[in-house]
Length: 363
Ligand SMILES: Nc1nc2c(c(=O)[nH]1)N[C@H]1C(S)=C(S)[C@@H](COP(=O)(O)O)O[C@H]1N2
Ligand SMILES: [Mo]
Image (cartoon, rainbow, N blue to C red; front, side):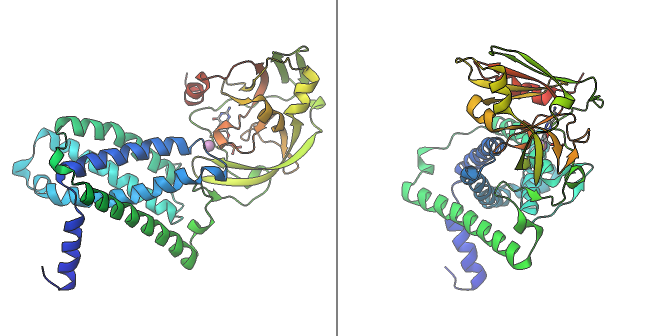
């Protein structure tokens, strides 16, 4: 043991390093955790969901430590071309996806707001994550080894993982401190990671589609809103009868990484349901776009939602969902269905809606 500072750091790191197989399995475990928490985070819009975002960030930073151990171990296999095998390419792709996901994630926390083509850095981060998962599974199957009993010294293993996660937590805390001290855009992020868009009305925030939905403009004079399903009185409204309604301020938080607070105007879903005389057995309200894109809310929540015709005193533009779009406070942007022409009152939820939001717009 030497007492020169570098040697101390090196010895400290070596003491933290779990056995190789455990490193491999931990990397796999964290990547899976990141995938699951990342996907789950897309459905969270209220501050209650913050632990998921924090866990995702801390685990991601802890992953850096594990990747360093791993890369230190396999570096010769990667840099000496005599040692290359078919699986080396897979390893390199896997590393690239992991490093891509980590760097874009970290840059996003610092508030870097560049676009690649038209994707935000956060969307690129998600993209890297989505390719990383199958690569990781494939990579693991080419060199499959279970960890052995010997790999688990209980005290040491606990200590090492505590240190790794604490390291991740402290690093994330440091990142947030740095954001505030340097006053980066990262400091304005919501707990979801979304950055603010401060304008008002149609021009105040971007037009976004979840995947590929992109209908032709809907002619207001041709358009009607239908309310049907588990109701005593199915209804059909023309646009002019819906124009004057309630106002509400609500926050739209898109999973591509921005949010906006706007004043919306339209008709309260609760009023529509009362007019249609909902039957007792009704449990869900499904909002359906002219494109087929749709989302359902539990009926009590739906009552509080708004079917907006206006934003910031302007009639909705086509891109923002004219003639009518859902304003669902407490829900993520992809659930705020645009170009709505039908409201279905139902007894059941609609699991297929998940798939439809992804596929709608593809022919
Ligand atoms: N019909 C339909 N509604 C949709 C979408 C879509 O692709 N199709 N995208 C959703 C997503 S992902 C978001 S963030 C918001 C964006 O609303 P905006 O374009 O008015 O900003 O609309 C939602 N409503
Ligand atoms: Mo979105």
